[in-house]
Amino acid sequence: MGHGHAHGHHHGHHGHDHEHETAPALPAAFDPAVPDEALSPEQRSRRSLLRRAGLLGAGLAAGSVLGAATPAAASAGRRRTGFLWLAGDHHIHTQYSNDGKYRVVDQVRQGARHGMDWLVITDHGNATHAKIGVEKVNPDIKEARAAHEDTLVFQGLEWNIPAAEHGTVFVHPGRNEVAVLKQFETDYDGSVKGASDSTPANEALAVAGLNFLADQVRRRKVKDALMLANHPARRGVDSPHEIRAWRDATGTRHRIAVGFEGAPGHQAAGLPAPLGMARSRGLYDNNPGPNSFPGYPPESYRTWGGFDWMTATVGGLWDSLLAEGKPWWITANSDSHQVYADTAVRGGPDSDYAAGGRHTDPVYGGRIDLTQGDYWPGQYSRTHVGADGFSYAAVMDGIRAGRLWVDHGQLVDALDVRVTGGGRWATLGGALHVRKGTQVTLTVDVTPAGGPNWAGFVPELARVDVIQGDVTGPVADPDTFTAPTAKVVKAYDVSDATGVTRLTFDLGRVEKPVYVRLRGTDGNRSAVGALGAAVDPAGPALDLAGDADPWRDLWFYTNPVWVLPS
Figure 1 (cartoon, one colour):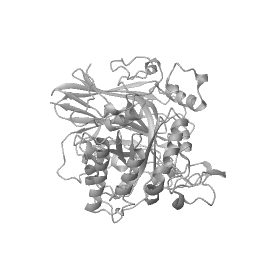
Figure 2 (cartoon, rainbow, N blue to C red):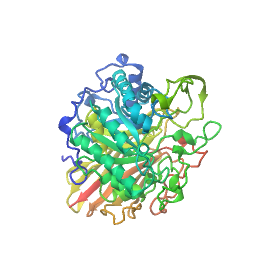
Figure 3 (cartoon, rainbow, N blue to C red):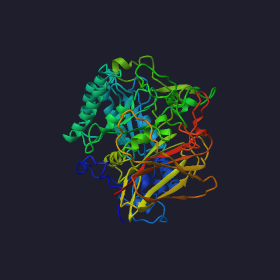
Figure 4 (cartoon, helix red, strand yellow):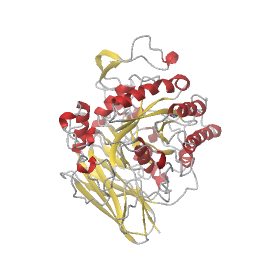
């Protein structure tokens, strides 16, 4: 059977597969040859999550890619799409951030406890971090890697994108990871360079920074580098033309900017008083400012079902990017700084971030803190990456390829998505190339939550939506943020389903390029989409400041699959 998710037309590889490290053996929690009693408590916790998701079985023991031709009814652990799905978080802060608190090992330990297979440490870019923090945090990251061998820990930073918002930048581990990140931050960080205003010169500096990273990959200073834009609609300063410029900056061979947060962190911020800080989910409680893009409507500054307006609006900005036929992916993460209901506080009064580039270690504070808006990595938000092995390179390759789906509150345990036609298939982020008129079918296997989430209840999926749009090519106006053909084409009521549920959608005989993506909900809150009921009859509802319990409004989203007839 043809593989179908080759990236030939618009999903280029970065071209350095020969440099990547040999994939290590699978972590003990994944390996059924390791008995439960031989696992640490952390590893047993992870194994229980894998069992719930049906991702533990003999097919994983060899540590190789699972067979693409495995039938749908195969034993647990064999995924038809042929990848090892690893959950992670690319946006995490530590004591090396001016507004952070925890040690690196604290975040990594908690991430592993909450089922994370990969994590990116992303302390804030600023003059102090560039001068001191990039180097100081590296030994702590190396120690965390050694202490938690079953978790891949990347070093990155939260880039102050010149003329725009923040972004995650991270590199493949190696001897030059500190040097490359340090030079990047020194030369291209908007805060360090005084380049925050929305000017053409500052926008050009952002593109130059991405080109610098691509050059480091070409020169083999680092094996790979990626950028993902963080909370893109929070302040309205990420204009459509800037996002397109980042996406297109480095070409297809060394693509660096690959997507944005479909859902921001800080999800606990919406919990109502007196149990929470009574703000907005994601801390999305801003209004237009002098550097904001004037075309964005007021509602873009709020989250919708916990998701950023750019992603949550069917036919909106994300769909306008996908309609160009070019890759741009979504993620979800914690943006963890200080965790809701934690008991730790920053170390004593000698904590001087400006002088030392870090805060002193946290200490026990003697009370439960309900004034914070963050969760631990994996406690609420997860990004699932389809990797061809357990390695840093495999995770980065999977992110670049768009083999990603995201969820909140452990709404579902697993998703298996395939578009088939003409004897070939493609999965998330891929492109199915067929002859015009080929019959094409979307098949989705949904594994429901098999146990309680971290709030103590078992989530129940109520509905799955199929969203489809035409691929219309590059836009004439780079500030376009609508896609007129994108809409919900099918809604499946799965509220009474039990066990793994298969959904099948017939795309018919495809004559023109299209893409499909998926969205699911617990059904607790919904509203007609911004572009009307004909486009989205029951999408996520606007989150209300101070009254947005994130656990009562759960969604998952997938990245798209293209169908390209010729």
